[in-house]
Length: 270
Image (cartoon, rainbow, N blue to C red; front, side, top):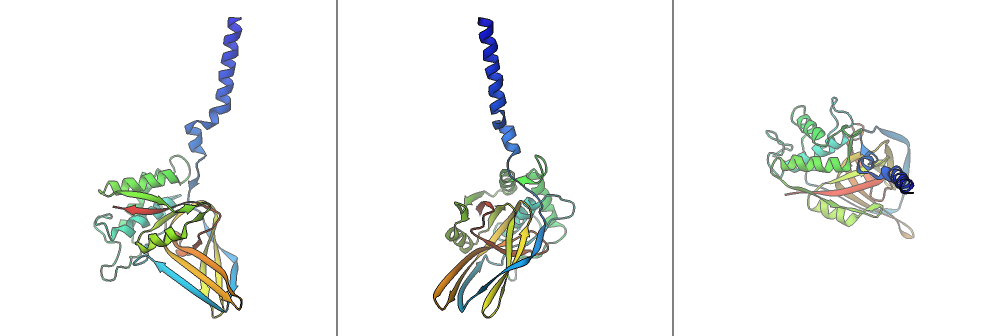
């Protein structure tokens, strides 16, 4: 009888391992969303809004933001690109984040275009710190956040993240407060759309650009548009202005209530 009990106990343990093994930390890590280079394509579709009048508020950070794209020798590098834009953005306020180079023009505070020595070096360092392609294609949210923090820590600055996602949307008031305080945000998205907006006398056209895979990008502004017709206010549209990391359209607008938003954070430096 004792032997039968031991055999039964062993079988129960084996069954438990089989049933719950999928929840082990290593296997859970394998299911974490990863962000890699995703093509952006221009859609033939667009959205048109007709109105009799409108109110528009567009605010962005001082000098805008850097708009970089991946270097040819780095694959699945949207995390490193977004991280390098964050580094270059704050280089204006925290000296020597990019040693030996200023990311902005001292005469007017606007950000320089991407050059071929210092920016690629930052991207390459972040690419390594973020463990890009080590645990799968691209980088995870945790790897991105840890790698960027390490970059700043190595230069004696602290970096923290403040969540601005509320439910399935972004908290627009929090986004406005961040931009007004001259801070950028980082967005983690699954496939979805960004927009370029053309204004006409009685209508606006939202040209659609689709990011076809999981992607990381930064936001550095906000846009609110209120549309009126003879009956009054009929539509309010709210966006954050983003640097996409893509050469086809380096900047655009991302709806704060887009259904493909996985996470969004204000990046705080001190």
